[in-house]
Amino acid sequence: MFKPHYPPHHYFDNKVYFITARTVDKNRFFNAREKKNLLKKILIEAGNKFKIGFYAWTILDNHYHLLLDVLKGESISGFIKTINGKSAFLLNGIEKARKRKIWFNYWDTCIRSEKDFWMRFNYIHHNSIKHCYAEKMEDYLLSSCNCWLEKKGVEWMSSVFEKYPIIDFTIGDSALHSKE
Image (cartoon, rainbow, N blue to C red; front, side, top):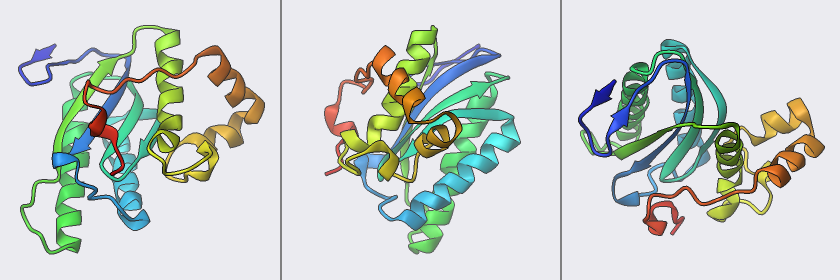
């Protein structure tokens, strides 16, 4: 199903989606571990509410990336509204900045192939290095990287990176993902 929006969102059932959401003017609203943990908790709650599974995720100061297993495509919109709405409300309450706009937009891409899946999986886990949050993926605690390392091991993770090298999936604006 297509809904008019920029960027346009196409929703399909029983698909895997790569999602990126970023903050207004790339502001670093989630610049502390507690704020990121708040967003992580909301992500988990929204996943449970909308029956959306997580393959990979990372939360940075001004954006997040998700690789999701989606049963009902139309649930993506409510899922994102829940995450962004609740996180904005709670963050604004903490910072006493009611009605401040936190989130700018989100982009979703339906995964087209196994290669596409694994390249985005790797991109998500490497994002903390790309934006200078960590020197090694496993040092950054606000991503699913360590879950996969515990589940499958270092050799498996290395083989996935070797077989499916990272490409840059940013939306034309390299400053979108800049830490500065």
